[in-house]
Length: 238
Image (cartoon, rainbow, N blue to C red):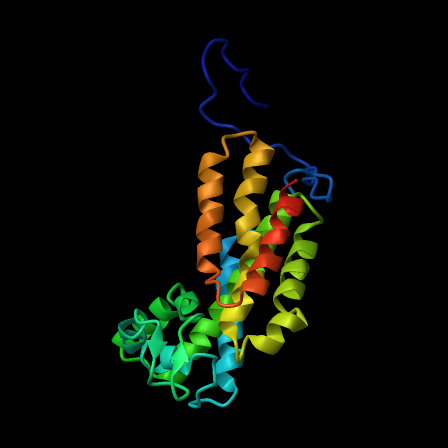
């Protein structure tokens, strides 16, 4: 027998109850049940993972060899590209040529290659970093846009991002004309700020500015591609 508890005084010791104890409910309906933790489709970790995988795949293909991008002068000597960008006539290439499309490589392709060359990185590695980055940016932009539009599940948004970045139009030209793939791959980033602002019913001034930055980063090398990418913006944001 145990002594009765004195009213008003807390029990100093608690003796465990005898007999079998009821087991905790760990069924799926129990809120305490442990569930697998997944990253959301718009999480930046997916961007880094896709960039890393794309870099490994591209670096394993013809390791140490350059790919022939449209403006090879940007890949090999970005500083020299900026030096000869200002005159309209360039006598050093193709027996002389008008630089009507050169300005499209000034942003963002040339700064990326210039940074790599200042770090003394080999040209082939800078090219692989650039191509994998363009692929990952397109993937992440589509997943973030699908999340903002509340379309599909997390898995289907990731699948949509991969299908978008692996679209044959991009994969065919990205190795030889990577700047031409930029408008299409950056189109979700031009639409995303507008969709977010319309969903939240906030001012459009800041989102329009961010959308303009995405358009600026498209480069404008191929005007038809740029027009096609921009034509989808009002439809997606409406």
